[in-house]
Image (tube, rainbow, N blue to C red; front, side, top):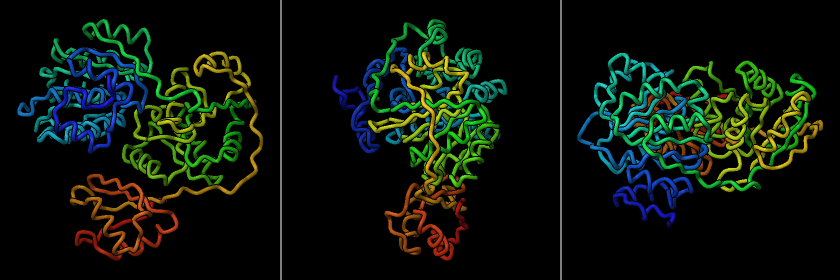
Length: 458
């Protein structure tokens, strides 16, 4: 079959929309799944983060909606609120060609009051986390009896987090003859049991491996004991000099310790873990995606489902508790035919695990010791991020910001990076060498005839 979306039974308006969104051709998982999914069949797809699976199920959700019927007709369950937000954003883009489609994001860690209000106005597609969805069902605020398509996204991660019973209870609230779609980076016995109990003769599809073995180069280093890791990380950063990197630790406390260690060394690093408030998590991810932060030190909450494109380098500071999580971590690098580096530290006691990891990466491992770095000058991030106290509620648009920066602040358009407009704040990435001066000039100007408070985030 051709890998063109034009080969699919989609409305011409959706095909035009896909073209406008930059989707030129289907990824392997889309090409394998979409004919079955659009035909209304139950499908289990093996697909890692970044493979395009949201489009593989999103086109079906949009296509089968009755827009005039304001009740939930499709449900997507995600393991984390970050993934739920990302999926909802992608679905809204896919739905642009249809008017009045309402997509609600219902996740924990967010105030429940506004979610009550949103549900009272009705919605077509629900995207959320199991705990919050179940809570809203118990409170009598969410009725899933008309849902005829369900999606379980990153099912293996959901099971790791202990959501199996919640998922089962939620799906029992939906129509019994619904179409069920399940996507997982790995297949295991638990996935098979879900298929037997929740799905009707599902088609099993394994997406083609989009990354050749040469896309990711694996480096394994031995450290005598856990306490030697910070200095080993510092030496590795001196050797590899990554423009950006993600570091994975197993605990929140150690995640913060490594982040503090790197900041003391002059590296612009931020931590990401479950103890952070949602506002702080969102800001951290924005700064990292804006290239205003060089290193993100994260627990495995960041290993899956984050809207971060391709990392030059991934560090496994700690070996994961489940070996399959290693694949999710290193899958953040070496994407889209880019070259990636994976750096893993093993204590002397963990060297007996080498055969296990050789099976995971399908190649022999030669464990080495990292040599002391040459103490090169730390490369600062290319951008700094400006936070403006105005957003969508002020009807602020990217064109307004670009216009103000180029006309009032004298900034070249090429010096402007990502612009992320949220409901009440906006984040703008500016080249580091002009950011201070630009903010000074812009703070004395007006945007859309209003004075907007702003500051650089350090």
